[in-house]
Image (cartoon, rainbow, N blue to C red; front, side, top):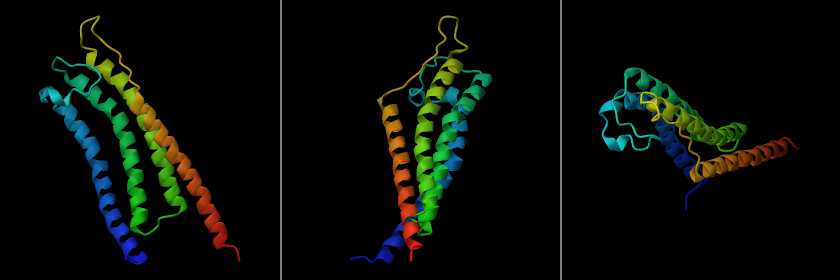
Length: 181
């Protein structure tokens, strides 16, 4: 059977790996987003099927720049989530598993999920406008999407915020007990 010390050491090692992963993702997300729009006109069809509108023409540079800027909305929310995960795993790496800082990371992760849904809604509306603005009159589109996965993400975000609230109360109780003589 493993000792508490061995478990903590394993948590620290795994946390170090995850912290590194999230650090890399923080830098990769905007770079990959930029590369996607830089090479959009030469991408295979499979890379564009997740967009809310079908693009059947070569897009001018101005449209690609606007599309990139709009794509930064959900990208920045994803980066916000990654930064909080990075902070959380840095705490775990230091063997800090139950503190006010952990609570703050969890709360921010819950909000990141809620912001993610809102950012994707705004992204979908704006990207549909930008990608069809060069279409002839009557073929321009505004698309809004909100589905069951968005509802699920909102619920998970709310649950994480609630759990962080419970954790915060538990941290306060533990602190109170530690200072009681």
